[in-house]
Image (cartoon, rainbow, N blue to C red; front, top):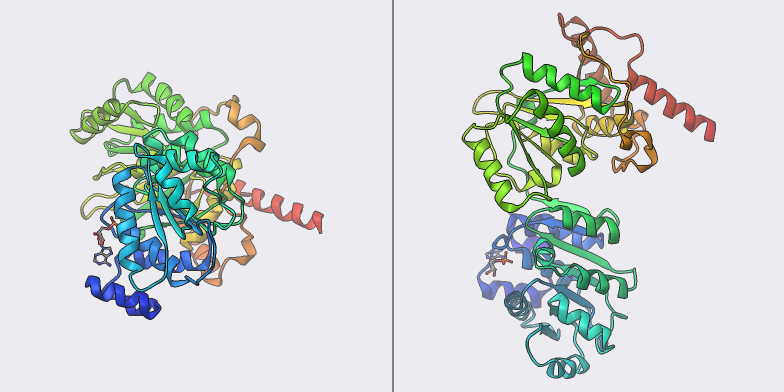
Length: 449
Ligand code: AMP
């Protein structure tokens, strides 16, 4: 087990920690430390009580050097005044032997006192978004020297309706700074703000308590479009009675509703949906109905599934392939029952090939491909989002297939043999669509050169 000694902290900081009686860093402290030290932007998923405050304070203070500035170098935004007080206390505990000026500001108290305190000079400022915005619009609070922005309890800040204040603060800042964010859950609101203001922060979360990879049977079908995928899932649901506790993923809430309506035609009252446009009560009752098996399945998005405490899933079905390999891992890790294999089935359209390859590269494993049964009707119709590929958000990193390790290729060859021999499972293909996609990409690359 790591100790704080492994963090190689300056003596003044180590002494303060020793006096607090803390010996071992918590998991989130351990995982965030090197990311924050590296200067990269970070999105940490951690609840209160996990030690997240020290998780961002320690690396920030490790790098602390005396500078003679009036305006803050570090701004920590938190949702409530209680948290302002608490975080300031934590800063004071850690900086007992360092020369750091900290200050907390929040609404509901005299703004003039805070103006004066700010004018006296501050290094680490902790505040609620409303008061921070007011004082910066006033011109009293300046961000000229700001090096680090911490947004703590991001989800709660947005839940409390501080989005306008937060975005106006963000737009007043110069772009060169490190952003460190923590949220208990990834909500769609958090995701929206991240999309708009931050470029791919590194995600740090504690290992999802999912089924280990070896215990998940992964299957894949190449399917031309979304509506054909619906035909296939209907077929699977009506012919495979082991699909009795199913988690169905799509990539956005609009498509959750589309999938629900189409499935509900054939399987009335068997499926529920969970997404951020539904009220809290609706979501809770859907969850309860699923837990007590009144519902056979839930259709949801990655964002919503993070906060769901559901177990005993017979099948995870990816109607759309996850747009990042990490999300894919997270999704399939939700399946699995005590001592039994979990089953994860993914439907991949040609425009999702890149994401599919990225997931295989991350796992260093090829997903077994199954042939679409012949009696499945192939829809000619494309949904709106399938017509314009440019609108398609592709977060998956571009994969150069040649860069995959030798072990991957070895396994790939092995899988091929197994797949080809599997009776009634995978039929040999002359040209797999995947290969065509890869070939096309390679050809495009060659052309560029
Ligand atoms: P937080 O999640 O930041 O609200 O922290 C929860 C509580 O854990 C606070 O009272 C911290 O002082 C305490 N704490 C933080 N880090 C550690 C640690 N490494 N060992 C023991 N307690 C800690």
